[in-house]
Image 1 (spheres, rainbow, N blue to C red):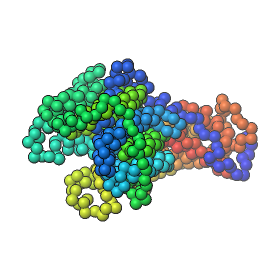
Image 2: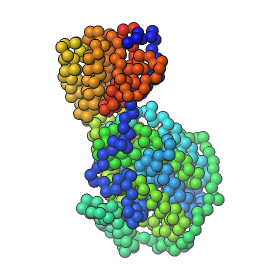
Image 3: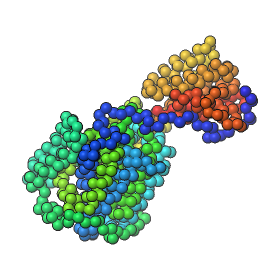
Image 4: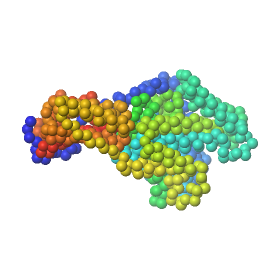
Length: 595
Protein backbone atom coordinates (compact mmCIF):
# COMPACT_ATOMS: atom_id res chain seq x y z
CA UNK A 1 0.00 0.00 0.00
CA UNK A 2 1.41 3.35 -1.04
CA UNK A 3 2.31 5.94 1.55
CA UNK A 4 -0.43 8.46 2.28
CA UNK A 5 -0.01 12.05 1.20
CA UNK A 6 1.08 14.64 3.73
CA UNK A 7 -2.38 16.19 3.90
CA UNK A 8 -5.78 14.59 3.64
CA UNK A 9 -8.89 15.78 1.86
CA UNK A 10 -11.71 17.31 3.82
CA UNK A 11 -14.05 14.81 5.41
CA UNK A 12 -16.94 16.14 3.33
CA UNK A 13 -15.16 15.08 0.14
CA UNK A 14 -15.06 11.42 1.12
CA UNK A 15 -17.55 9.09 -0.54
CA UNK A 16 -20.57 8.52 1.60
CA UNK A 17 -21.38 5.14 3.05
CA UNK A 18 -23.84 3.07 1.04
CA UNK A 19 -27.33 4.49 1.21
CA UNK A 20 -29.51 2.96 3.86
CA UNK A 21 -32.92 1.61 2.96
CA UNK A 22 -35.51 4.38 2.95
CA UNK A 23 -37.87 4.82 5.87
CA UNK A 24 -40.72 3.90 3.55
CA UNK A 25 -39.07 0.54 2.75
CA UNK A 26 -38.39 -0.07 6.44
CA UNK A 27 -41.95 0.58 7.66
CA UNK A 28 -43.64 -2.28 9.47
CA UNK A 29 -47.40 -2.37 9.06
CA UNK A 30 -49.22 -2.01 12.41
CA UNK A 31 -51.71 -4.82 13.01
CA UNK A 32 -54.64 -2.46 13.70
CA UNK A 33 -54.50 -0.73 10.29
CA UNK A 34 -57.36 -1.53 7.94
CA UNK A 35 -56.17 0.62 5.03
CA UNK A 36 -52.46 1.46 5.13
CA UNK A 37 -50.73 4.49 3.64
CA UNK A 38 -50.33 3.11 0.10
CA UNK A 39 -53.52 1.02 -0.02
CA UNK A 40 -56.55 2.14 -2.01
CA UNK A 41 -59.87 1.55 -0.17
CA UNK A 42 -62.93 0.45 -2.17
CA UNK A 43 -64.74 3.39 -3.77
CA UNK A 44 -67.66 3.43 -1.32
CA UNK A 45 -65.33 3.25 1.69
CA UNK A 46 -63.16 5.97 0.15
CA UNK A 47 -66.12 8.32 -0.31
CA UNK A 48 -67.41 7.71 3.22
CA UNK A 49 -63.97 8.07 4.81
CA UNK A 50 -63.55 11.38 3.00
CA UNK A 51 -66.96 12.50 4.25
CA UNK A 52 -65.99 11.62 7.83
CA UNK A 53 -62.92 13.86 7.64
CA UNK A 54 -64.90 16.67 6.03
CA UNK A 55 -67.50 16.46 8.78
CA UNK A 56 -64.73 17.25 11.27
CA UNK A 57 -63.09 19.92 9.06
CA UNK A 58 -66.22 21.98 8.45
CA UNK A 59 -66.94 23.10 12.03
CA UNK A 60 -63.50 24.76 12.11
CA UNK A 61 -64.67 26.98 9.24
CA UNK A 62 -66.65 28.91 11.82
CA UNK A 63 -63.37 30.75 12.50
CA UNK A 64 -63.53 32.10 8.94
CA UNK A 65 -67.03 33.45 9.54
CA UNK A 66 -66.11 34.93 12.93
CA UNK A 67 -63.06 36.75 11.54
CA UNK A 68 -65.08 38.03 8.58
CA UNK A 69 -67.79 39.32 10.93
CA UNK A 70 -65.19 40.98 13.20
CA UNK A 71 -63.78 42.80 10.18
CA UNK A 72 -67.20 44.27 9.41
CA UNK A 73 -67.81 42.10 6.33
CA UNK A 74 -71.38 41.18 5.33
CA UNK A 75 -72.85 37.72 5.76
CA UNK A 76 -72.58 37.22 1.99
CA UNK A 77 -68.82 37.95 2.13
CA UNK A 78 -68.49 35.58 5.10
CA UNK A 79 -70.25 32.89 3.03
CA UNK A 80 -67.86 33.42 0.11
CA UNK A 81 -64.88 33.31 2.48
CA UNK A 82 -66.08 29.97 3.85
CA UNK A 83 -66.34 28.56 0.31
CA UNK A 84 -62.84 29.76 -0.57
CA UNK A 85 -61.59 28.28 2.69
CA UNK A 86 -62.94 24.87 1.65
CA UNK A 87 -61.05 25.10 -1.65
CA UNK A 88 -57.86 26.12 0.16
CA UNK A 89 -58.14 23.13 2.53
CA UNK A 90 -58.76 20.81 -0.43
CA UNK A 91 -55.58 21.93 -2.21
CA UNK A 92 -53.56 21.84 1.01
CA UNK A 93 -54.72 18.28 1.74
CA UNK A 94 -53.50 17.07 -1.65
CA UNK A 95 -50.22 18.97 -1.29
CA UNK A 96 -49.50 17.39 2.09
CA UNK A 97 -50.39 13.84 1.04
CA UNK A 98 -47.81 13.63 -1.75
CA UNK A 99 -44.10 14.30 -2.07
CA UNK A 100 -43.56 16.95 -4.73
CA UNK A 101 -39.82 17.44 -4.49
CA UNK A 102 -39.14 19.00 -1.08
CA UNK A 103 -42.84 19.74 -0.45
CA UNK A 104 -45.34 17.42 1.22
CA UNK A 105 -44.94 14.88 4.01
CA UNK A 106 -46.45 11.98 2.04
CA UNK A 107 -48.98 11.34 4.83
CA UNK A 108 -52.69 11.96 5.13
CA UNK A 109 -52.55 15.10 7.28
CA UNK A 110 -55.36 17.47 6.21
CA UNK A 111 -55.36 20.97 7.68
CA UNK A 112 -58.12 22.91 9.38
CA UNK A 113 -58.59 26.59 10.12
CA UNK A 114 -56.45 26.65 13.23
CA UNK A 115 -57.29 28.33 16.51
CA UNK A 116 -53.55 29.09 16.83
CA UNK A 117 -54.03 32.10 14.57
CA UNK A 118 -57.45 33.15 15.86
CA UNK A 119 -56.39 35.73 18.48
CA UNK A 120 -53.88 37.41 16.14
CA UNK A 121 -56.30 37.34 13.21
CA UNK A 122 -59.08 38.80 15.36
CA UNK A 123 -56.79 41.68 16.35
CA UNK A 124 -55.86 42.28 12.71
CA UNK A 125 -59.53 42.20 11.70
CA UNK A 126 -60.37 44.92 14.26
CA UNK A 127 -57.37 47.05 13.20
CA UNK A 128 -57.48 46.84 9.43
CA UNK A 129 -60.34 44.69 8.21
CA UNK A 130 -60.21 41.51 6.18
CA UNK A 131 -57.43 42.88 3.94
CA UNK A 132 -55.03 43.09 6.88
CA UNK A 133 -55.96 39.56 7.96
CA UNK A 134 -55.15 38.28 4.47
CA UNK A 135 -51.77 40.03 4.35
CA UNK A 136 -50.64 38.98 7.82
CA UNK A 137 -51.72 35.34 7.41
CA UNK A 138 -49.76 35.17 4.14
CA UNK A 139 -46.75 36.58 6.04
CA UNK A 140 -47.16 33.89 8.70
CA UNK A 141 -47.11 31.23 5.98
CA UNK A 142 -43.74 32.53 4.77
CA UNK A 143 -42.36 32.43 8.32
CA UNK A 144 -43.47 28.80 8.72
CA UNK A 145 -41.79 27.92 5.40
CA UNK A 146 -38.53 29.47 6.67
CA UNK A 147 -38.89 27.47 9.88
CA UNK A 148 -39.20 24.31 7.75
CA UNK A 149 -35.94 25.17 5.98
CA UNK A 150 -34.16 25.42 9.34
CA UNK A 151 -35.53 22.16 10.78
CA UNK A 152 -32.67 19.84 9.68
CA UNK A 153 -30.32 22.01 11.74
CA UNK A 154 -32.59 21.72 14.78
CA UNK A 155 -32.69 17.97 15.39
CA UNK A 156 -31.39 18.37 18.91
CA UNK A 157 -34.07 20.94 19.65
CA UNK A 158 -36.85 18.44 18.86
CA UNK A 159 -35.84 14.96 20.10
CA UNK A 160 -38.61 12.35 20.61
CA UNK A 161 -39.35 13.55 24.15
CA UNK A 162 -40.03 17.08 22.86
CA UNK A 163 -41.94 15.87 19.78
CA UNK A 164 -43.99 13.54 21.98
CA UNK A 165 -44.77 16.24 24.49
CA UNK A 166 -45.90 18.58 21.73
CA UNK A 167 -48.37 15.88 20.67
CA UNK A 168 -49.45 15.51 24.32
CA UNK A 169 -49.96 19.27 24.59
CA UNK A 170 -51.98 19.35 21.37
CA UNK A 171 -54.14 16.50 22.69
CA UNK A 172 -54.65 18.23 26.04
CA UNK A 173 -55.47 21.58 24.42
CA UNK A 174 -57.84 19.97 21.93
CA UNK A 175 -59.43 17.77 24.58
CA UNK A 176 -60.02 20.60 27.04
CA UNK A 177 -61.67 22.69 24.33
CA UNK A 178 -63.87 19.68 23.67
CA UNK A 179 -64.67 19.20 27.37
CA UNK A 180 -65.69 22.86 27.62
CA UNK A 181 -68.19 22.41 24.80
CA UNK A 182 -69.24 18.98 26.08
CA UNK A 183 -70.11 20.33 29.56
CA UNK A 184 -71.58 23.62 28.35
CA UNK A 185 -69.18 25.66 30.49
CA UNK A 186 -69.98 28.86 28.61
CA UNK A 187 -73.57 28.86 29.95
CA UNK A 188 -73.84 26.85 33.16
CA UNK A 189 -77.21 28.44 33.99
CA UNK A 190 -78.90 27.24 30.81
CA UNK A 191 -82.03 25.31 31.87
CA UNK A 192 -81.37 22.91 28.99
CA UNK A 193 -77.84 22.13 30.17
CA UNK A 194 -78.75 18.57 31.17
CA UNK A 195 -80.11 17.82 27.71
CA UNK A 196 -77.01 19.31 26.08
CA UNK A 197 -74.68 17.15 28.18
CA UNK A 198 -76.84 14.11 27.51
CA UNK A 199 -76.66 14.67 23.74
CA UNK A 200 -72.89 15.12 23.92
CA UNK A 201 -72.50 12.02 26.09
CA UNK A 202 -74.53 9.88 23.71
CA UNK A 203 -72.54 11.18 20.73
CA UNK A 204 -69.24 10.37 22.46
CA UNK A 205 -70.55 6.95 23.56
CA UNK A 206 -71.39 6.03 19.97
CA UNK A 207 -67.96 7.11 18.73
CA UNK A 208 -66.14 5.20 21.47
CA UNK A 209 -68.35 2.14 21.21
CA UNK A 210 -67.88 1.79 17.46
CA UNK A 211 -64.16 2.58 17.72
CA UNK A 212 -63.54 -0.06 20.42
CA UNK A 213 -66.03 -2.83 19.58
CA UNK A 214 -67.02 -2.05 16.01
CA UNK A 215 -65.72 -3.97 13.02
CA UNK A 216 -65.40 -3.18 9.35
CA UNK A 217 -67.29 -0.17 8.02
CA UNK A 218 -68.89 0.92 11.34
CA UNK A 219 -65.46 1.14 12.96
CA UNK A 220 -64.05 3.02 9.98
CA UNK A 221 -66.82 5.61 10.19
CA UNK A 222 -67.22 5.81 13.97
CA UNK A 223 -66.56 9.57 14.02
CA UNK A 224 -68.93 10.38 11.18
CA UNK A 225 -71.69 8.11 12.52
CA UNK A 226 -71.36 9.76 15.94
CA UNK A 227 -71.62 13.26 14.44
CA UNK A 228 -74.63 12.38 12.27
CA UNK A 229 -76.40 10.76 15.23
CA UNK A 230 -75.49 13.72 17.44
CA UNK A 231 -76.90 16.17 14.89
CA UNK A 232 -80.12 14.18 14.74
CA UNK A 233 -80.42 14.23 18.52
CA UNK A 234 -79.70 17.98 18.58
CA UNK A 235 -82.46 18.66 16.05
CA UNK A 236 -84.91 16.47 17.99
CA UNK A 237 -84.11 18.31 21.23
CA UNK A 238 -84.46 21.75 19.65
CA UNK A 239 -80.75 22.58 19.99
CA UNK A 240 -80.69 24.00 16.44
CA UNK A 241 -82.24 27.50 16.76
CA UNK A 242 -84.81 29.07 14.47
CA UNK A 243 -82.24 31.68 13.45
CA UNK A 244 -79.86 28.95 12.26
CA UNK A 245 -82.71 27.28 10.38
CA UNK A 246 -83.54 30.61 8.71
CA UNK A 247 -79.92 31.08 7.66
CA UNK A 248 -79.89 27.58 6.17
CA UNK A 249 -83.14 28.26 4.27
CA UNK A 250 -81.77 31.54 2.88
CA UNK A 251 -78.70 29.92 1.33
CA UNK A 252 -78.99 28.75 -2.31
CA UNK A 253 -78.32 25.16 -3.32
CA UNK A 254 -75.63 26.20 -5.78
CA UNK A 255 -73.27 29.16 -5.89
CA UNK A 256 -69.59 29.58 -6.71
CA UNK A 257 -67.44 31.45 -4.15
CA UNK A 258 -66.82 35.01 -5.32
CA UNK A 259 -63.23 36.21 -4.62
CA UNK A 260 -63.78 39.84 -5.62
CA UNK A 261 -63.91 40.97 -1.98
CA UNK A 262 -60.25 40.05 -1.42
CA UNK A 263 -57.64 42.71 -0.64
CA UNK A 264 -54.24 42.72 1.07
CA UNK A 265 -52.54 44.91 3.66
CA UNK A 266 -49.48 44.58 5.86
CA UNK A 267 -48.80 46.02 9.34
CA UNK A 268 -45.25 45.76 10.75
CA UNK A 269 -46.47 46.07 14.35
CA UNK A 270 -48.32 42.75 13.97
CA UNK A 271 -45.31 40.83 12.67
CA UNK A 272 -44.29 39.39 16.05
CA UNK A 273 -47.60 37.79 17.09
CA UNK A 274 -48.11 36.30 13.64
CA UNK A 275 -44.51 35.02 13.52
CA UNK A 276 -44.96 33.34 16.91
CA UNK A 277 -48.26 31.83 15.76
CA UNK A 278 -46.44 30.50 12.66
CA UNK A 279 -43.76 28.92 14.86
CA UNK A 280 -46.43 27.33 17.05
CA UNK A 281 -48.18 26.05 13.93
CA UNK A 282 -44.92 24.58 12.63
CA UNK A 283 -44.33 22.83 15.96
CA UNK A 284 -47.87 21.50 15.86
CA UNK A 285 -47.21 20.10 12.38
CA UNK A 286 -44.09 18.38 13.75
CA UNK A 287 -46.33 16.62 16.26
CA UNK A 288 -48.97 15.79 13.64
CA UNK A 289 -46.51 14.34 11.11
CA UNK A 290 -44.66 12.48 13.87
CA UNK A 291 -47.98 10.94 14.90
CA UNK A 292 -48.67 9.98 11.27
CA UNK A 293 -45.30 8.23 11.19
CA UNK A 294 -46.01 6.29 14.39
CA UNK A 295 -49.47 5.07 13.37
CA UNK A 296 -48.13 3.92 9.99
CA UNK A 297 -45.06 2.09 11.32
CA UNK A 298 -45.16 -0.48 14.12
CA UNK A 299 -41.34 -0.40 14.30
CA UNK A 300 -41.13 3.41 14.61
CA UNK A 301 -38.28 4.55 16.87
CA UNK A 302 -37.44 8.13 15.92
CA UNK A 303 -38.93 10.94 13.80
CA UNK A 304 -38.08 11.08 10.10
CA UNK A 305 -36.95 14.70 9.89
CA UNK A 306 -36.96 14.76 6.10
CA UNK A 307 -40.66 13.93 5.99
CA UNK A 308 -41.37 16.36 8.83
CA UNK A 309 -39.50 19.21 7.13
CA UNK A 310 -41.39 18.61 3.87
CA UNK A 311 -44.64 18.51 5.83
CA UNK A 312 -43.96 21.80 7.62
CA UNK A 313 -43.01 23.40 4.29
CA UNK A 314 -46.27 22.20 2.74
CA UNK A 315 -48.15 23.56 5.75
CA UNK A 316 -46.44 26.94 5.38
CA UNK A 317 -47.37 27.07 1.69
CA UNK A 318 -50.94 26.12 2.58
CA UNK A 319 -51.09 28.87 5.19
CA UNK A 320 -49.76 31.39 2.65
CA UNK A 321 -52.36 30.36 0.08
CA UNK A 322 -55.05 30.43 2.76
CA UNK A 323 -54.08 34.02 3.56
CA UNK A 324 -54.46 34.88 -0.11
CA UNK A 325 -58.11 33.73 -0.03
CA UNK A 326 -59.07 35.09 3.43
CA UNK A 327 -58.70 31.81 5.33
CA UNK A 328 -57.22 32.82 8.70
CA UNK A 329 -54.48 30.27 9.30
CA UNK A 330 -54.41 26.71 7.99
CA UNK A 331 -52.51 24.12 10.01
CA UNK A 332 -52.40 20.31 9.96
CA UNK A 333 -55.12 19.01 12.26
CA UNK A 334 -54.36 16.60 15.10
CA UNK A 335 -58.07 15.78 15.31
CA UNK A 336 -58.03 14.38 11.78
CA UNK A 337 -54.96 12.28 12.49
CA UNK A 338 -56.80 11.13 15.60
CA UNK A 339 -59.57 9.85 13.32
CA UNK A 340 -57.00 7.77 11.44
CA UNK A 341 -55.69 6.34 14.71
CA UNK A 342 -59.19 5.47 15.87
CA UNK A 343 -60.43 4.02 12.58
CA UNK A 344 -57.27 2.36 11.26
CA UNK A 345 -57.51 4.09 7.86
CA UNK A 346 -54.42 6.14 6.91
CA UNK A 347 -54.48 5.75 3.12
CA UNK A 348 -53.27 8.83 1.29
CA UNK A 349 -55.96 8.13 -1.34
CA UNK A 350 -58.45 9.47 1.19
CA UNK A 351 -56.97 12.92 0.41
CA UNK A 352 -58.68 12.82 -3.01
CA UNK A 353 -62.02 12.05 -1.43
CA UNK A 354 -61.58 14.86 1.10
CA UNK A 355 -60.62 17.33 -1.65
CA UNK A 356 -63.55 16.23 -3.81
CA UNK A 357 -66.07 16.66 -0.98
CA UNK A 358 -64.69 20.10 -0.06
CA UNK A 359 -64.75 21.41 -3.63
CA UNK A 360 -68.32 20.12 -3.98
CA UNK A 361 -69.42 21.70 -0.70
CA UNK A 362 -67.77 25.00 -1.60
CA UNK A 363 -70.33 25.26 -4.41
CA UNK A 364 -73.30 24.31 -2.20
CA UNK A 365 -73.76 27.13 0.35
CA UNK A 366 -76.80 25.45 1.92
CA UNK A 367 -74.83 22.32 2.85
CA UNK A 368 -72.06 24.46 4.32
CA UNK A 369 -74.61 26.31 6.43
CA UNK A 370 -75.94 22.99 7.77
CA UNK A 371 -72.46 21.87 8.76
CA UNK A 372 -71.74 25.18 10.45
CA UNK A 373 -74.97 24.79 12.47
CA UNK A 374 -73.52 21.83 14.42
CA UNK A 375 -74.28 22.51 18.11
CA UNK A 376 -71.36 23.13 20.45
CA UNK A 377 -71.96 20.01 22.63
CA UNK A 378 -71.79 17.74 19.57
CA UNK A 379 -68.59 19.38 18.37
CA UNK A 380 -67.25 19.10 21.93
CA UNK A 381 -67.87 15.33 21.96
CA UNK A 382 -65.94 14.94 18.69
CA UNK A 383 -63.02 16.98 20.05
CA UNK A 384 -62.90 14.91 23.26
CA UNK A 385 -62.86 11.72 21.17
CA UNK A 386 -59.97 12.93 19.00
CA UNK A 387 -58.09 14.71 21.81
CA UNK A 388 -57.95 11.51 23.86
CA UNK A 389 -56.35 9.64 20.96
CA UNK A 390 -53.80 12.43 20.47
CA UNK A 391 -52.92 12.52 24.17
CA UNK A 392 -52.16 8.80 24.33
CA UNK A 393 -50.28 8.96 21.03
CA UNK A 394 -48.02 11.66 22.46
CA UNK A 395 -47.32 9.56 25.55
CA UNK A 396 -46.29 6.66 23.33
CA UNK A 397 -43.88 8.89 21.37
CA UNK A 398 -42.30 10.36 24.51
CA UNK A 399 -41.95 6.90 26.07
CA UNK A 400 -40.24 5.49 22.96
CA UNK A 401 -36.98 6.53 24.64
CA UNK A 402 -35.83 5.67 28.17
CA UNK A 403 -37.41 8.02 30.70
CA UNK A 404 -34.22 9.60 32.05
CA UNK A 405 -34.23 12.36 34.69
CA UNK A 406 -33.80 14.90 31.89
CA UNK A 407 -36.88 13.62 30.07
CA UNK A 408 -38.83 13.36 33.32
CA UNK A 409 -38.29 17.04 34.12
CA UNK A 410 -38.89 18.16 30.52
CA UNK A 411 -42.33 16.52 30.47
CA UNK A 412 -43.30 17.07 34.11
CA UNK A 413 -42.37 20.74 34.45
CA UNK A 414 -43.70 21.65 30.98
CA UNK A 415 -47.03 19.95 31.65
CA UNK A 416 -47.51 21.63 35.03
CA UNK A 417 -46.81 25.11 33.67
CA UNK A 418 -48.99 24.49 30.60
CA UNK A 419 -51.97 23.39 32.70
CA UNK A 420 -51.49 26.38 35.01
CA UNK A 421 -52.83 28.52 32.14
CA UNK A 422 -56.29 27.07 32.76
CA UNK A 423 -55.99 26.71 36.54
CA UNK A 424 -54.65 30.22 37.30
CA UNK A 425 -55.86 32.47 34.45
CA UNK A 426 -55.80 35.53 36.72
CA UNK A 427 -51.99 35.35 36.94
CA UNK A 428 -51.54 35.29 33.18
CA UNK A 429 -53.97 38.19 32.79
CA UNK A 430 -51.51 40.35 34.77
CA UNK A 431 -48.58 39.65 32.45
CA UNK A 432 -47.49 42.38 30.01
CA UNK A 433 -49.21 42.38 26.63
CA UNK A 434 -46.04 41.45 24.72
CA UNK A 435 -45.92 38.09 26.53
CA UNK A 436 -49.45 37.07 25.58
CA UNK A 437 -48.22 35.54 22.33
CA UNK A 438 -46.30 33.03 24.46
CA UNK A 439 -48.82 32.55 27.27
CA UNK A 440 -52.29 32.76 25.73
CA UNK A 441 -52.76 29.00 25.39
CA UNK A 442 -51.74 25.69 26.89
CA UNK A 443 -50.04 24.78 23.62
CA UNK A 444 -47.86 27.90 23.41
CA UNK A 445 -46.72 27.61 27.05
CA UNK A 446 -46.03 23.89 26.64
CA UNK A 447 -43.93 24.43 23.52
CA UNK A 448 -41.92 27.33 24.93
CA UNK A 449 -41.16 25.67 28.29
CA UNK A 450 -40.47 22.26 26.75
CA UNK A 451 -38.06 23.58 24.12
CA UNK A 452 -36.23 25.83 26.59
CA UNK A 453 -35.79 23.01 29.13
CA UNK A 454 -34.50 20.70 26.44
CA UNK A 455 -31.92 23.29 25.35
CA UNK A 456 -30.76 23.75 28.95
CA UNK A 457 -30.52 19.99 29.49
CA UNK A 458 -28.30 19.62 26.42
CA UNK A 459 -25.50 20.87 28.67
CA UNK A 460 -23.45 17.86 29.73
CA UNK A 461 -25.74 15.43 27.91
CA UNK A 462 -23.02 13.71 25.86
CA UNK A 463 -21.38 10.87 27.79
CA UNK A 464 -18.09 9.34 26.69
CA UNK A 465 -16.28 6.10 27.52
CA UNK A 466 -12.75 5.44 26.30
CA UNK A 467 -11.62 1.82 25.88
CA UNK A 468 -8.07 0.69 25.16
CA UNK A 469 -8.06 -2.58 23.18
CA UNK A 470 -4.75 -4.41 23.43
CA UNK A 471 -3.87 -7.12 20.86
CA UNK A 472 -4.21 -10.39 22.79
CA UNK A 473 -4.28 -13.57 20.73
CA UNK A 474 -7.22 -12.43 18.62
CA UNK A 475 -9.36 -11.40 21.60
CA UNK A 476 -9.65 -7.73 20.66
CA UNK A 477 -13.26 -8.22 19.53
CA UNK A 478 -14.36 -9.94 22.73
CA UNK A 479 -12.70 -7.22 24.81
CA UNK A 480 -14.68 -4.56 22.92
CA UNK A 481 -17.95 -6.53 23.10
CA UNK A 482 -17.82 -6.96 26.87
CA UNK A 483 -17.02 -3.31 27.55
CA UNK A 484 -19.46 -1.93 24.98
CA UNK A 485 -22.41 -4.05 26.15
CA UNK A 486 -21.89 -2.95 29.75
CA UNK A 487 -21.78 0.69 28.67
CA UNK A 488 -24.84 0.34 26.39
CA UNK A 489 -26.81 -1.10 29.30
CA UNK A 490 -25.69 1.73 31.57
CA UNK A 491 -26.76 4.34 29.00
CA UNK A 492 -30.07 2.52 28.36
CA UNK A 493 -29.28 2.22 24.66
CA UNK A 494 -31.94 0.23 22.80
CA UNK A 495 -31.04 -3.36 21.93
CA UNK A 496 -31.45 -2.75 18.19
CA UNK A 497 -29.18 0.31 18.15
CA UNK A 498 -26.57 -1.38 20.34
CA UNK A 499 -26.54 -4.47 18.11
CA UNK A 500 -26.13 -2.39 14.94
CA UNK A 501 -23.23 -0.41 16.40
CA UNK A 502 -21.56 -3.52 17.85
CA UNK A 503 -21.81 -5.42 14.56
CA UNK A 504 -20.37 -2.50 12.55
CA UNK A 505 -17.49 -2.00 14.98
CA UNK A 506 -16.70 -5.73 15.12
CA UNK A 507 -16.51 -5.94 11.34
CA UNK A 508 -14.17 -2.97 11.26
CA UNK A 509 -11.96 -4.31 14.09
CA UNK A 510 -11.76 -7.69 12.40
CA UNK A 511 -10.71 -6.03 9.18
CA UNK A 512 -7.96 -4.07 10.93
CA UNK A 513 -6.80 -7.09 12.93
CA UNK A 514 -6.72 -9.60 10.08
CA UNK A 515 -4.83 -7.21 7.82
CA UNK A 516 -2.31 -6.30 10.48
CA UNK A 517 -3.02 -2.58 9.98
CA UNK A 518 -2.64 -1.57 13.65
CA UNK A 519 0.81 -1.25 15.20
CA UNK A 520 -0.09 -1.79 18.85
CA UNK A 521 -3.28 -1.01 20.75
CA UNK A 522 -6.49 0.46 19.39
CA UNK A 523 -8.29 3.19 21.34
CA UNK A 524 -12.07 3.04 21.02
CA UNK A 525 -13.95 6.17 22.14
CA UNK A 526 -17.71 5.63 22.53
CA UNK A 527 -19.98 8.64 23.11
CA UNK A 528 -23.76 9.00 23.32
CA UNK A 529 -26.16 11.93 23.80
CA UNK A 530 -29.58 10.20 23.50
CA UNK A 531 -29.64 11.06 19.79
CA UNK A 532 -26.34 9.98 18.22
CA UNK A 533 -23.99 7.16 19.15
CA UNK A 534 -20.46 7.82 17.90
CA UNK A 535 -17.64 5.24 17.93
CA UNK A 536 -14.14 6.43 17.05
CA UNK A 537 -11.21 4.07 16.55
CA UNK A 538 -7.68 5.51 16.79
CA UNK A 539 -4.46 3.64 16.25
CA UNK A 540 -1.00 3.87 14.71
CA UNK A 541 -0.60 2.10 11.39
CA UNK A 542 -2.42 2.23 8.07
CA UNK A 543 -6.00 2.43 6.91
CA UNK A 544 -7.20 -0.93 5.54
CA UNK A 545 -8.28 -1.44 1.96
CA UNK A 546 -11.58 -3.21 1.41
CA UNK A 547 -12.41 -4.72 -1.93
CA UNK A 548 -15.71 -3.35 -3.18
CA UNK A 549 -17.93 -4.26 -6.10
CA UNK A 550 -17.92 -0.64 -7.17
CA UNK A 551 -15.10 0.45 -9.42
CA UNK A 552 -12.57 2.60 -7.58
CA UNK A 553 -11.91 5.83 -9.49
CA UNK A 554 -8.31 6.55 -10.34
CA UNK A 555 -6.56 9.20 -8.32
CA UNK A 556 -8.27 8.39 -5.02
CA UNK A 557 -6.13 8.91 -1.95
CA UNK A 558 -5.96 6.23 0.71
CA UNK A 559 -8.75 7.56 2.95
CA UNK A 560 -11.11 7.74 -0.03
CA UNK A 561 -10.31 4.18 -1.09
CA UNK A 562 -10.96 3.02 2.48
CA UNK A 563 -14.32 4.76 2.72
CA UNK A 564 -15.45 3.57 -0.73
CA UNK A 565 -14.54 -0.01 0.09
CA UNK A 566 -16.05 0.02 3.57
CA UNK A 567 -19.37 1.18 2.12
CA UNK A 568 -19.64 -2.20 0.41
CA UNK A 569 -18.10 -4.18 3.26
CA UNK A 570 -20.60 -2.85 5.80
CA UNK A 571 -23.56 -3.20 3.43
CA UNK A 572 -25.71 -4.89 6.06
CA UNK A 573 -25.11 -2.60 9.05
CA UNK A 574 -25.05 0.94 7.66
CA UNK A 575 -23.55 3.50 10.02
CA UNK A 576 -25.35 6.76 9.31
CA UNK A 577 -22.08 8.65 8.89
CA UNK A 578 -18.57 7.35 8.24
CA UNK A 579 -15.45 9.52 8.38
CA UNK A 580 -11.79 8.55 8.23
CA UNK A 581 -8.45 10.27 8.12
CA UNK A 582 -4.76 9.37 8.24
CA UNK A 583 -1.94 11.76 8.97
CA UNK A 584 1.58 10.39 9.12
CA UNK A 585 1.12 7.11 11.02
CA UNK A 586 -1.99 8.11 12.99
CA UNK A 587 -5.30 6.68 11.77
CA UNK A 588 -8.79 7.67 12.89
CA UNK A 589 -12.08 6.08 11.83
CA UNK A 590 -15.39 7.46 13.07
CA UNK A 591 -18.86 5.91 12.75
CA UNK A 592 -22.05 7.68 13.81
CA UNK A 593 -25.36 5.90 14.41
CA UNK A 594 -28.57 7.86 14.80
CA UNK A 595 -30.66 6.24 17.53
